[in-house]
Length: 135
Image 1 (tube, one colour):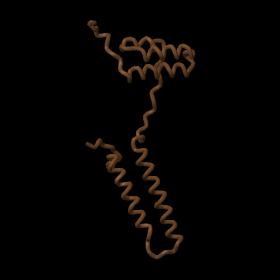
Image 2 (cartoon, rainbow, N blue to C red):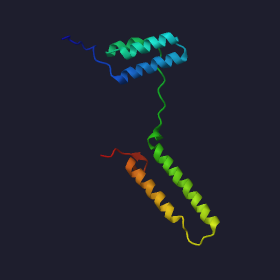
Image 3 (cartoon, helix red, strand yellow):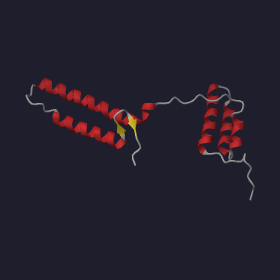
Image 4 (cartoon, rainbow, N blue to C red):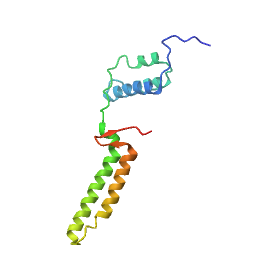
């Protein structure tokens, strides 16, 4: 069995992906030719150890970081809320136009509200906009 030195720590998939992202960005910017980009990417994915990865980006600037989207986790819930608001508006306008004396939209509005509250509860949403992990 081989004795491993401290430099021979195995590279994770996430580390390979980060180096591949830098190489792809350099290829997209024209810093590398298509052949160089393909060659480096193949070698990046074949690398087994961390120290092997540094050679592929040594002559390249760091890739720009991805923009952080804080509202992304609440996307489906925000869409559900928007649909509820649109439907509620349509129902109330329809009631106003119909001239019916009792407020019949209360029944569908009740179920729309229940569905929204359940969706928020399942996703772990709390007032104040925080998402908590449910156990």
